[in-house]
Length: 155
Length: 425
Figure 1 (cartoon, rainbow over the protein chains, first blue to last red):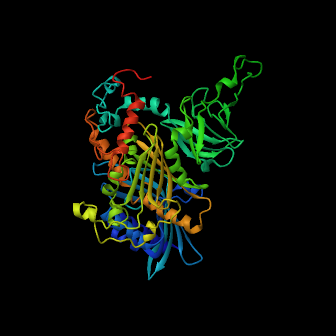
Figure 2: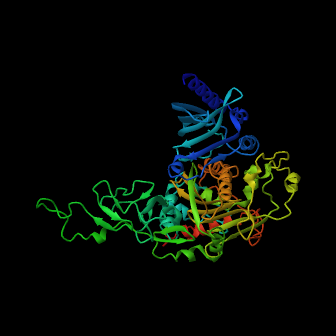
Figure 3: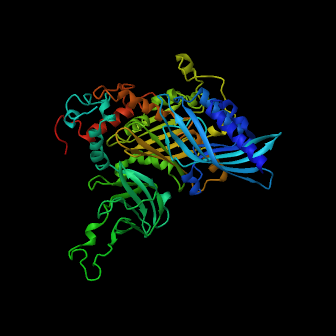
């Protein structure tokens, strides 16, 4: 378990590095082809309600998001810094791993303000695909229910 | 910038009666904001609180606001609707501390005064004293100390409340034209699917302008044109209500012959870009659910509601002012009770289009914040709202600012800014 734990922590570090260093073109490749990615308020999850702010049920949708962010959407460039803690990792019967952890995203605006942009928990289903670990599913269940201004870059 | 109310009522303020010049003070003045709370939110208007589907069972409640006054809407034990100001009649503490829940009664934590679902005072601890000591005076009448109860009504499952004893009934306030368009979306029972919230550092009226502004849609939101979704050449229907002009609708109606985008190419507008296509086009599917096939239905019912149908995603947006420089936007997603699993899946997928991360909406708050920042220091400078001004009756184009002008004419009147120094009633 220690080895897989280290591997999963390394995967998570690679994931947040991809986002924090503005390499979102590489972001979809951290998922398997038939993947699920969602950002949803805890408020809805607690009530068993499905309304998300981002909901992708294929890697193609992740790539669409990247193309749109780079070419269509208008937003002020910002810098994210992700921090994760409190990992709970469990092996699943089907050979995948379930991983829960906290996250905090500090956002720094062009004018130089840094603030807690989003706090929440990741719930991930991780599988091994051609030696590498990838996300089969990643849910970002956020506590910070009021999204400040807009959310462009994924969490 | 400080602006006195006398200045706001002066002849120079809102000089143009046609709503084409808006003094920027209305977006940042605390005095004007406070006056709005009195004249608009506690004036002759009905404010949207939520969906009946959010409080379907007796005792269900939701905390929300009218303007910035905290209110609670409830489903009473007899199945009716009630709304009351969330402030204990004893010493003023907020009674209900939860966002949502179910309760037969609401008890203030401070001294445990308790109230029924309609806000009637049920009990006062130690009212008769204790161990022979004095309690409340003998003339204390609980019936005179209920919570502040509001007039409440619903239209097609949308719950509204008002502080006003004189405003017309809700259906008349909404009006026949707007009521018909609400019925278009609420033509069968709905199911609440959850909400998402967005907070903007800008004035609430900038968002009202935004949802009355079809002109910006294809220019600010480049997703439309980048992926060939929305065209200036689509048939439009942009009208206001027939009474005060504060409500409106923008419909973008899909024509069989979609325009090719030539209008953009000819004008070299930055938003036209060939060559991008979506890998998953289902996000733009449009399953016909209404008689009129429209991709976009954006309908603000002043002051707190926007009814939205974009493709097959359905939302009741609530706009809540949070001081002159901030507002909160709450997207209440819903589907129909009889949705097939496939249809429900499509609605959730199309939630990607709207909300704080929406492909075709994320820029709105960016734009309103740019206006807030740009106008803060120049209270008496004005915006220029002229598009299609010479053709106010031309309602089949998206290139118009007539709905915005109509809003400002109604706002000016409601606020008493049309009375040149006279103190409005």
